[in-house]
Image 1 (cartoon, helix red, strand yellow):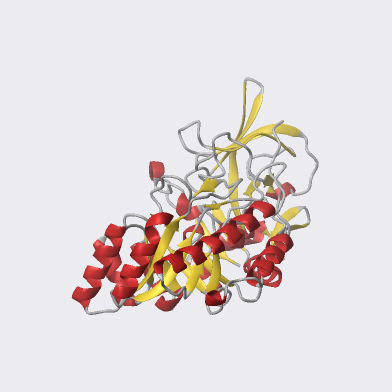
Image 2: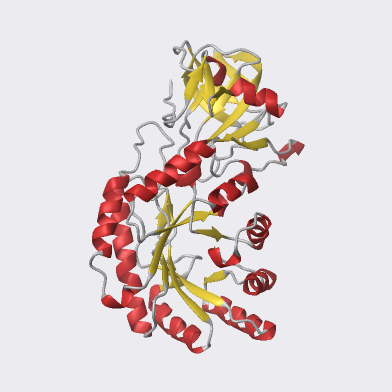
Length: 408
């Protein structure tokens, strides 16, 4: 048997059935009318934000990275919990505006911004995190034509990365941000242009579980920001320290030591140079805030045995949960946390693979995991489904269509 990932805290059972928001998932499936179904727990999101606020220095702001999950009701919930939102496309700009989020709370990062996206962001008053000198020139030219003062920051490609990161976003040649040695001159140019200078965005990596590495990266980002501001002779109104905090997906993973990260950051804030006294520091998190608050439910439609192996075939699959299938950047496929939701907590009786309904061998939600015996009609739960699930998967592949999403 291959191990399954750890089921997140906060989930219980009612009469042997997985429960979310105090009710068995069968209740929520009946309410929705069909599977597959994503359930997101508002209470678990609130608890995660509260724990983060309690552990971090009060000075630190919290931004939500919309790409993790742009479900509109979830964004509306987040609007009352976080200090800002980070987007990565013109489409996400429309989504946050439709959710009633104030543009001045939004920053826009990402390479390859089209002129239409730049124009929409400038017109709305969104902060642009510039990814290149060319993008800066286009933004300034568009702002002049629009007769609008743009809110501009620089995304810095730092000369370091986040150790242990599942996805490195800085250090070396990268499509993201402007190499650190070129930043001071551009910062000076932006300030001299009369733009509303907003500071730096430094994102070294994501999905790290090593608190020591996260704390070290945050300290290095602060040092780098101070050095670049000095070299450019500019103030530093804001500094986005990026994300980095990961969640346990796989067997052997352990949660980030949040207290250690907060203590180290508080100590660093206590020893800032004087010219950073008024700087607003923030971090941007996506999966850490919402990932463990989501569960994906899919129903077994067939049970089959092939060459002695059991396959539980479901009405869901990688078209909704690409990451859980191992096809979203994973080098070696490992099992996400999953369970037979309608036999939750029952002892392991057999080895089985949970597969989806697509005509590809890639469509596998669990590979040779240990489960209680399951049959047609039982529900399968895939956990850690609150981030990079519904919106990060090819829902229209083979004409399958999206799953229903519900915020509880």
